[in-house]
Image (cartoon, rainbow, N blue to C red; front, side):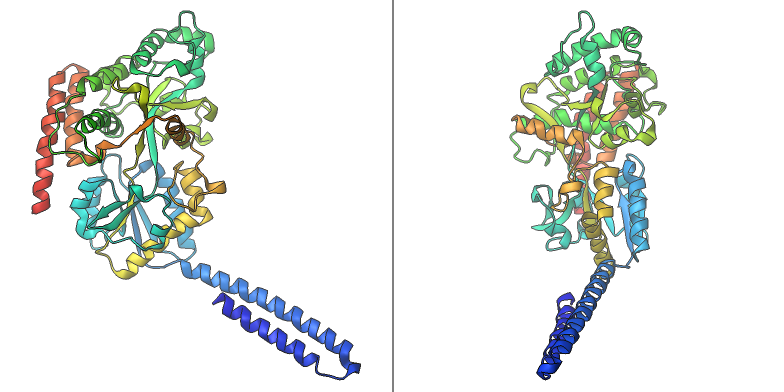
Length: 487
């Protein structure tokens, strides 16, 4: 379209020049001037036409069909609302709803039952595919698919790509390396440098000692430490860090022992081989913290704030926290240069272990919607990953690392925690796969584990109940999930 308009205008310019040159010798100067004027006019017209055509093309890329995105990540809600507003100002029709922490599955079920269901939703794993198979539109061949830089995390069903990863994430133990370095200068400190922590045993000794010397640290360095670790909250807004991310560790190593080629595929029954390791890490989190173990499920703790305000040195979480911790609007004391991340050392293969890397964030488009809504949804997602507004939101406001070929230059990932994952890989460490993606009936299984873990932690239950919830609960929920597939 653009080339055609330009060609027509330039042809007119050439014709004017030719006609001007057909007069007598006496008219050569006038002809030249006329030809030059015509050419200038034509060039100006061509430029104006090209600009208009480009503007028309840009406007045409904004599809005004209904788009309803059900967002999976609460911490990105503000950025998504801003993106939707900007797109709508251009002629779009986008609504974004963000599910509460730990409530995505139930929210999705509820919203899908409505007449105007989500047109874009999140798929985490193969179990989600089994649940929503009839709702998954084939994304193969879409503009979104063509921009994917690494298809290894695509989710497929019947040889079709039905969900595309929208970010890569890494998690481990975030720590304040400035405070940890300060600790290293204390008399009889367990380590001389933060780099000396390379296994669980060393981490545990450091955490134990640091937790005992909180007052000494505060007096000498003017901080406000409450404990070595931030609170291990077991309320609904925090417990996923342990029933999901920490629980991943025993699952990962057991699946690896069992020879699974896909460590995120899972199996119908588990043995709980590494639950003693889980217990050691959990006990460290609880004992080497300033939080009261009896009130961890109360919802009164804010672990992010504790690390941000230098009340804790260690905090298990992921690279999505980098943006929040370094956002000046949050008023935190910690700075970007203070932050680093280490693996969740588990006492199994610490020498070779890197960060936990993967994703449970995949865009899926609702195949039950009209083709107009599907096309509008695909157009919106393509705008997000190609426009300056979208790329800026994902990289700078959401703090994510996106797996698309459009995220280069100014939009290359700036997340230091994500960069740390790459650093470990370059050192030859093995990234820990997100085996928790195989969790059957994820919300129900995690709820039972959290309930047992809460009772163990507040003293009203024992560790055997945690094992039962973990192992027997897995087999139970797997069977229920399989039965649901046949109904």
